[in-house]
Image (cartoon, rainbow, N blue to C red; front, side, top):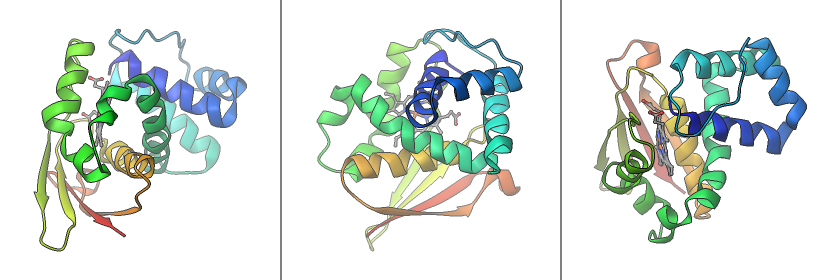
Length: 178
Ligand code: HEM
């Protein structure tokens, strides 16, 4: 996982809980920290941080990833305003993840292995989002979608129809707008 993801997690924790909490998380997860945005770090380190945070807050790992994804979006908007500017709606932004957002990320962070999503727009206005990744971080995607919707002042509900963390071979998330 690219260091930028760890930087984002650190920033999200600092903004909501403060520097001491980040230091405690690193200590308890037995990690040194000092992540550089372009560096590559083992996925085990992000899992260790998420698991430690989950134990501290009495949450599941999935709930922590959703929290992280949601809080990360406004930080990403501050860092990469151009990626958000050309979209009139959250739907438009989310549907551009394969064609614009993650290709830009790969240019900025060489070697980034971003997931590919399958999208299907339904007649009732909802979007079915398919996700397949050995990282099984569908909850991070869930949080990103939720956070992106808030940035566009939209309210969405996300229903995990199938989930790799529950034995399915891929995740299917139905995004419904209110
Ligand atoms: C709704 C929009 C987005 C969704 C659903 C999404 C989803 C994800 C997920 C689930 C991952 C974890 C990797 C995996 O599952 O294999 C990921 C990785 C990543 N995403 Fe996105 N993302 C979105 C937007 C963005 C934006 C706006 C940025 C930055 C400008 C970004 C940058 C990254 C980076 C740097 C990684 C790490 C890749 C690596 O470490 O190899 N994403 N994304």
